[in-house]
Amino acid sequence: MRKIQKRMEVFYQTHAYLVEHTNAPVHRTLMDEIDWNHRLIGIKGTRGVGKTTFLLQYAKEYFGKDRSCLYVNMNNFYFQNASLIDFAGEFIKRGGKVLLIDQVFKHPNWSHELRMCYDRYPELKIVFTGSSVMRLKEENPELKDIVKSYNLRGFSFREFLNLQTNNNFPIYTLDDILQKHESIVKEILPKVHPLNYFQDYLHHGFYPFFLEKRNFSENLLKTMNMMIEVDILLIKQIELKYLSKIKKLLYLLAVDGPSAPNVSQLATDIQTSRATVMNYIKYLADSRLINMVYPQGESFPKKPCKIMMHNTNLMYSIYPVKVEEQDVLETFFLNTMYKGHKLYKGDKGTSFLVDGKIPFRICDKGNKIKNNPNIVYAMHHIEVGHDNQIPLWLFGFVY
Image (cartoon, rainbow, N blue to C red; front, side):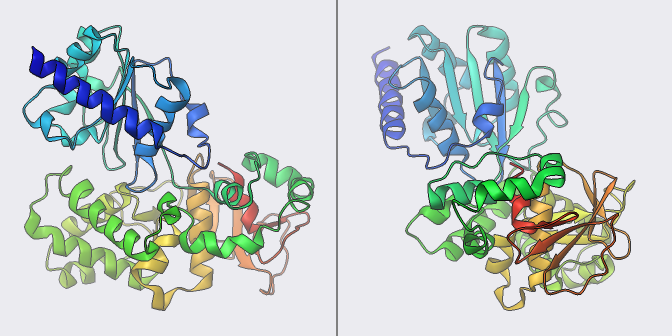
């Protein structure tokens, strides 16, 4: 009994230290979007976007030093020999009400134990984090009817700009931007010139760890390797001997730039089957390393018409010698619109079809265009737009 009490006290002390030293420089909008009344909440997101900080910030904002909330990380070796069910029971005995579980997939049989906790302790709320590779409801049917799942993304350009300039610019919906972009920009420009910060965001602004005093590109390369080694191999139960094939595939896709994959050639290059290449591509997309673009009406397992890196920061880290500006601009647009919108291959003369109805062309202001009133032009290097020509950077305000 005394051992259990000591062990629990260590967890409380760790929690208190982490919460006290947590500093979230930007209020993440997901904090306001989550319905915290749910008893089982899953927060997914790619490695490096700040899920741990998000949990600790929630504890800090909502509970302070109240010991009814406790953060634990499944990396702790204690859980190699302890069940979540028993731990939750001990926590409740000490007045516990909210259990924050980081990296839940590191715990054996985690989905079954979450279900048991949910059924056995109706007074307990559990908030857990997991990888973007996880299919919470599809692959864990026992959680399907009880878990509420959310996604934490990297910084939007809006969040990055707020952080860098100490502003508090609000979110604008796509409809807001399309209908009122000229008046919105007039609210922003007196306070800041966004184009002064846009290239920095494209290079290193998506992942919050750019704030750390380490080399960003090295840190991102390490994170990318962890996405493959842990988020893909561990969660998808792929043998370690196939690791080099998946890494080589990602590199080849990055080198090719945004294009339709030659699956047969890729299969030859990494010495595997076409079907395996397509599965690996799907895993890379699930881990938010790449995005697959399809014509409207098509989806996986069909071959995508274009594969793009998931965000522009990845482009500069994985293959910086071949970063084409047009590819960067289209990658930015796809990534920022990924939140809440569906993007499909555009027809001739357009880059994307958004939500199946709005054709967009992404271009630089130096491009000679024959203005088509039926197309929305997201234009780089302009601060103020007019009519159907809208500053590209403004689309970074949709979340």
